[in-house]
Image (cartoon, each protein chain N blue to C red):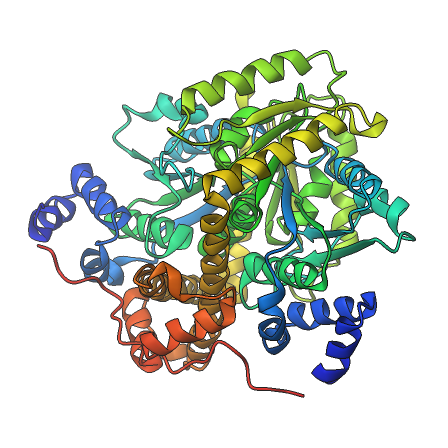
Length: 317
Length: 317
């Protein structure tokens, strides 16, 4: 295996290859030492999470945001999270291709990663990549996640500003509400805003926002219609991101949010290590020894781990 | 709080109220003692997982399967898993209503549960409910999950037979492939089979199955077109479920699958306990004491837990 020092000098020299290798290290689960070395340099990048159901044009939106940032001479990192199969462990690409306009631009670093297999789960792999891009000195880091579910909510824990993209006429809104995605949106993006149902969707989102209410002193999510392919609405979206960033700083929330992100990552890392231990303990048990009682089995495993925790909470009755 | 003995006698007497209360106990995270008491009675029920993306008619399919099972005088339990928001902790019902035909039937026990908040996560809450229904003596237990993602894969770990429902013309197939759902299907159900795109979807599924290949000596997933609302295809689906069950028994896979389910539940329970400990340790830390290094923080927490695990794997370079 490549030595840390090699990666480190490439990274220090601002060579994208150093960043790429550091992320690979993190992804394979042994980047801890590297990440710790660079931890103090983090905190400078603006981080943007972009999520929403499949097919809403997230990659196109992402590409448009990259173009916008480059127009202001900002360097950009993109972490594109593929929900890889838990069985095949293979990442399926696909619409990643739309980001390819930027592949030859030296101010843009694009990394597609699988969301599974890393010690700390999605939060671990993605959090590491964002931290490394930040430490590398990229000005803006965009995390794009495909799919609907828990992963989107996790992105909100990691990013300064979370964009939830939707498209009109898809009946997404109720599903998003179910999945808890609406609650994590700092900015709603209604893409394909030339669709006949676009105004209806905007009304739907507004009424759901009213239903949920707004936290006092909190940020009221903005709603930005876009046609990402044509660049329509992108300046407005960029301005909304900047407004949210300014609010985070002015309200003192930025520091709290970033501390929250560190805690979230630490939680993922710790649980990842514990998960390895639990799996090893379970795998080591002879097949015939267990009855149909998972609580007894869990107790045995926890005892074996010496974690000082029982499988059952203290009796309350 | 109600005493275990009260619930136990209701349960023993075959009173649905006893089952309902036992599941509530499990759901609130302190059902371990009850479940352990009934663990030895489990293993008799046929368990069926039913999953697929939103809007494919899972509730209607579920209702049709219940009707079919009742036609054979089998008692049925349904666990309907709602992906509740991780923020509001509220379960959103909705199309649950289609199961209401069966609400007055004493041979049917329906339980809607939130998927979060339980110690052992989805596997924990759902696994407990299935085990309790099984121990209660219900002949068939159907677990229905809403949404697309990790939870579906978990269902496959718990159920004897997993049905993946899809609808034509939705472009679901690629998304399902991404989410790893195809790999867990014992039976594909193409619902709304009167749709003009139904044959195309069946062809798509067949070619994806060919791409994935079939494990030697394994089960080749069946594909059943249905129109659940009209009852079309339900006898065929029921027969396919029976064939899969017969194959599980004849091949000796049933025992392995159920041991796997117990291990999966034990893992969820153990990790749930550990998660509580990690969260408590993180919450107890003073806000100002941590730098931006989540690995250092994770190490501290693991040390504090005394779990004898480090946050970093042994150095390999």
